[in-house]
Amino acid sequence: MKGLRQALQTESPLQIAGTINAYNAMLAKRAGFKAIYLSGAGVANADFGLPDLGMTNLTNIAEQVSRITSACDLPLLVDMDTGWGNAFNIERTIKTLIKCGAAAGHIEDQVQAKRCGHRPKKEIVSTEEMCDRLKAALDARNDENFIIMARTDALAIEGLDKTIERIQQYVHTGADMIFFEGATDIKQYQALTKVCKIPVLANITEFGVTPLFTRDELKDAGVKLILYPLSAFRAMSDAAIKVYDTIRQQGTQASLLPMMQTREQLYDVLGYHAYEEKLDELFAKGKAT
Image (cartoon, rainbow, N blue to C red; front, top):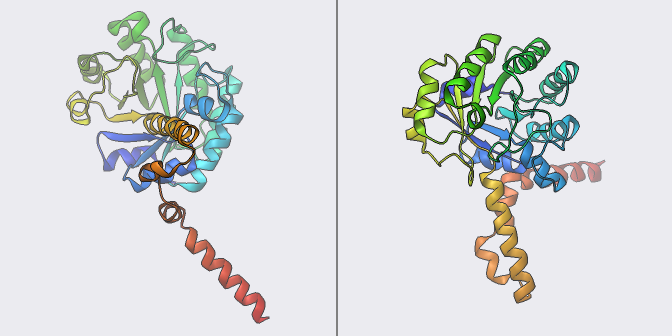
């Protein structure tokens, strides 16, 4: 399993594709991405039909992590919300993610009853409490290649200056990278990267408070990692709506074929024919004996 630092050495800024399942991860790799991401919101939405309000848990995430890392060897960054509890829970979270093959995880400074990072009325814990979360995560790390990323949602609550002060404390505590959530102006990234000694991630999610800054704009602002957490999932969901509506209205899916992945394209991604050839070989051996 490749590490996130290694991927960052091959591409800067490192574009990280959101993949809600193993098949998405395989598609992202074929598209040329060097790193992938599992969103907590994606698991809640797609697997459980729930909103992103911290209602999923470590077991839910770990199962999907295992599926993805079994199918794809790209480094996987995992959303671990607030760590799912106290220091002991955070310790278990880190060790579980490492065991499941994740390359990195980000832990945030929202309160336990968290909200989506692009929604109003978020609440954050004190800098000291977040540093305690980071210490618990760092102490639990039993693989030095595993990246612990500190996410802050403080910008919308405390403003830029105080948020940068928070981040500096997170860096001092030992965070490997920073997830700077909810930026509304490219200058905010510039201000942070000028003083932050570790790589900064920009979350470029659609329909939120952060404009869809381009890779070149973010590179010029000093950003080292760019995350697209749910882009494919949103496109897939919109396509599913169109498919269901069309079949109900027209009584056939014939008009939808041009927008569909073909059976052969699916088989090519999965390596289906190689599995069939193996079956043929096994059956041939059985008949021979």
